[in-house]
Length: 210
Ligand SMILES: Cc1cc2nc3c(=O)[nH]c(=O)nc-3n(C[C@H](O)[C@H](O)[C@H](O)COP(=O)(O)OP(=O)(O)OC[C@H]3O[C@@H](n4cnc5c(N)ncnc54)[C@H](O)[C@@H]3O)c2cc1C
Image (cartoon, rainbow, N blue to C red):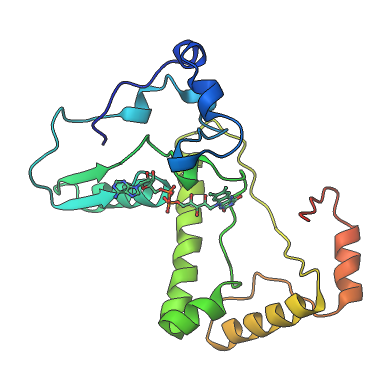
């Protein structure tokens, strides 16, 4: 929910100079328009309001309308239909990271474990990673159940440490994650650089980030 002006449609957006002002290289003060949302400027959902005024009270208030907030709101509505749920959005609907990411959706399986463990302890670190997996599953389920028009493809992914230092750190993190009880049966892991190169050579499409 956002109190603000009606979004411009595509033509208005183009003629108002906003396109020139807000597309392209990143701008200050979060003014950059997301690539993914450029064609959706006229969508009324961007500034969707279900009540003309903000309710004075609610049972559950969700802050932010990204993938996290919307999935939480959906979960709350389905779990407690009698509760009054309010979603507050400071900008446009899904205009944060959710509406401006690289287009692939990959939950962290184990890579963040050491950092989370140092900050919050082993149990919480496992739960954070588990939550990431659940959020991903929830998103895929939503897309499938609601026939959301998008290029959803679900498949295996590959992490390739490109230096020995990173490989050593990855190995240590993976072992710590496993020892703490992290789920690893669905993960194939090799510490052998020759085998890793073989896997990499069998991949049809590979994007290298330098
Ligand atoms: C450039 C980029 C590339 C990425 N690429 C990938 C990728 O390829 N694969 C992948 O899996 N992940 C990727 N990510 C990460 C992924 O997009 C995010 O982890 C995910 O979208 C976060 O969702 P969220 O709902 O937690 O946050 P957001 O989508 O950022 O939502 C938070 C919302 O809260 C609102 N908000 C903030 N503060 C307030 C407030 N005080 N009051 C009201 N509203 C507020 C914001 O306006 C925003 O809409 C990428 C992220 C970025 C930025």
